[in-house]
Image (cartoon, rainbow, N blue to C red; front, side, top):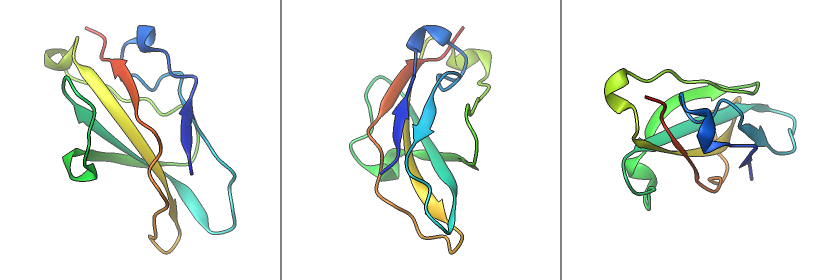
Length: 99
């Protein structure tokens, strides 16, 4: 299962500026699928998440429009392999989007 480490909400921006998706890479892994929910509370259902990217290196950074500044971004990741199959969800990492 991937996990997010090193996340620091004081970094602003997209919240994942100092985050890492940590996990053991196995044969056939393409990268980590990164998903987000913007709002006051974390997602309780993956259907509430919006897909951002599949990333193979960290850090992953995301720019948000100024209108999102000060809002909470709740990120979840999961491994994706070369066949499009996905692994289990990570824990949620929350950060404040910089103004």
